[in-house]
Length: 217
Image (cartoon, rainbow, N blue to C red; front, side, top):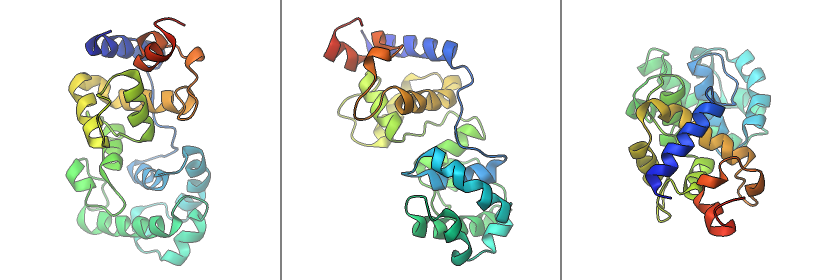
């Protein structure tokens, strides 16, 4: 199957079966999503959702977080990965957000990446989820799944390379959803160590399945 066909079939399938695909992080506004995504680096959404309610209760706005101290933030996020760095990043992010962006989460990818703790992946999540921009955030799930399915070249070595290839082939109107399609598929079906190929609903379009099991289940 040619790559173009894979994209067409997969977009058709996901658009029919997961038309409202969205982040599993809990949030009520752009500030809360930004905090949650910063915290979610190398950590599960489930863990972040368990931590953020108390954090947002104590620091409901960027102004509150900007005025806080490490000793106040750290205990609330102690159970996430890299709590020391993330505590510093959250405070630094909040200070810059209030001082340079009038407490408004920016929509521009470059502006977002100026914020402490915000890399390209996080910036793309915010631009995509909050502002519905055609930005493709590439985390470990997207990186793995897009390669297995055969959507990108196997020699793509970096998230940016994968991002560029995906954005090139996915119609703009589907890019925000496609990010979640790939993440959710990687989280629940196309697992890192043992993908559930025999339970997969899109195996007929998958290059990994074709290579390892033939063309049909």
